[in-house]
Amino acid sequence: MKEYTKEELNDIYIRRRKVLADYLTENNICACVFIDSEEHRDPAVAYFTGHANDAVLLIFSDAYTVLVPWDENLAKNNGFYDKMIPYTRYKNDEINAVKSVMNVYYTHGINSKIELPPYLSYPKYLHFIDELNNYNCSCKEEGAHSFVVRCRMCKDEYEIECTKEAARIGDIIIDKIEEQIKSGQIQTEMDVALFIEKECRIMGCQRTGFDTLAAGPQRSFAIHAFPGYTNAKWPDDGLSILDFGVVHKGYTSDTTITIAKGKLTEEQEKYVNLVQKAYDECVKLYKKENPVQLAAKKADSIFAAAKLKMPHTLGHAIGLEIHEKPRVSVKTESDLYFQPGMILTCEPGLYNPEVGGCRLENDVLITEDGNEVLTHSRIIRID
Image 1 (cartoon, helix red, strand yellow):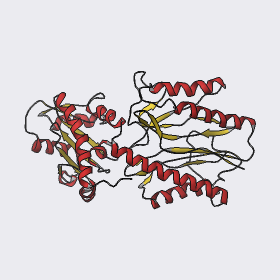
Image 2 (spheres, rainbow, N blue to C red):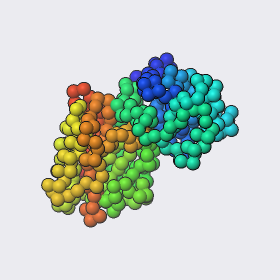
Image 3 (cartoon, helix red, strand yellow):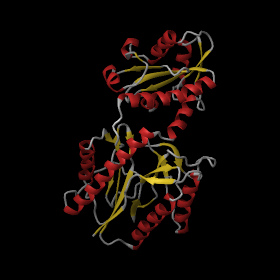
Image 4 (spheres, rainbow, N blue to C red):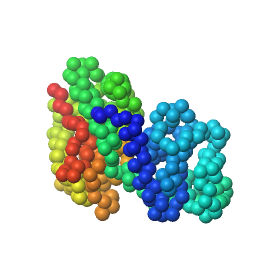
C-alpha cells in the first residue's frame, strides 16, 4: 500500500470536511455535531478527522473543525483538525463541550441553526436545547448526518487503498489456514480464531473486523454462530464455516470461507453447488448503474428454483464499520444503483440443522467499467 504523508492525509480530511461544509452552507446550517462515545459509536468522527476514539466533533459551515477528544495525546498523534480542545476542560460533558465551543467559535447570535446527531435520546436532546437556547437546534433523520452516511457509501482513493490492504492480508491468512488444516496444525474452532487474531496483528492490522465466527458441522447451520467459536473440532466431516475480517488503518475486510471436508451427502453437495452458482451469477451484476436490488433478486431466484431460501441479504457495504449502507437486498430502494467507489460484500448462503451451512463471501469494489473482487475466499474441499 502507498505510504501517505501527513500533508497528503490532511488534504484528504480537508476535502471530506469541505463536502459537508458545502452542504451546511446550502442548507443554512451553521454547525454540525458528531458524538462518538460508549453510548453510541459514530464513525463520522474518524471519517472527518482520523481520530478513532471517544470525542465530540463540531464542523462549521466554513469547514472549520473543532475536535474535543477524551484522549488528548492520541488525538494529537493521529488526528487532523483545525482546533483540538481536551474533553476534560468541559468536565467530560458533551453538552457543556458543544455549548462552550459554539459560544467561542460561532458568535452570529440567535436562531443560527445547529444540527445535532439523530441518535441522541429524547431527554438528552431536550437538555441540548435548554443549554443552546441562543441557537436553533434540530435533530432529524434526513439531514446532515444522513448526508454524511451517503458520502461514505463511495470510498475515496485512501479508503480504497486501506481496504485493499486489509483484503490482501485477509487473503494471506486464508491461504495459511488452508495449509495449516492440511498439515494438522489447525484442529479446532479456537485454533483458527486465535490464529487469525495473531496473524492479522503480525501483519500490521489493528484488530479483527468483528468477533471471528468459526463453526464446525454441528454449528454451521447458524448464520452467525453463537458463541463465535468454541473448542469443537474444526473443520470436521461435512460443512464448516469461517467468517472473519481484518482492519487496516480503520478499514475492514469481510470474508467467509466454507470447508467441505470428506464425502458430502447429496444434500450438502446441492448446497455447495447452489451457493457457488449464486455467487458466480450475482457478482457479475455488481456493476455501475445496475440497481442494487438486481443482484439480490438474482440470488433469491436461484435458490427459489431449488425450493430453498437464503435467510439474509446478499451483501452490505463495508468501510469504517463492518456493516455500512447500502445493503444488497430486495428491500433496498429500487432507485439506488451501484456506483464507482462502493465496496460491498457478495455472500450467498444456505443453512439447515440437518445439512449444515455453506456461505461464500468476498468484497467487491465497483469500478467505472465493472468491478474488482478484492478478496479471494472460496469453498475449500478437504479429503
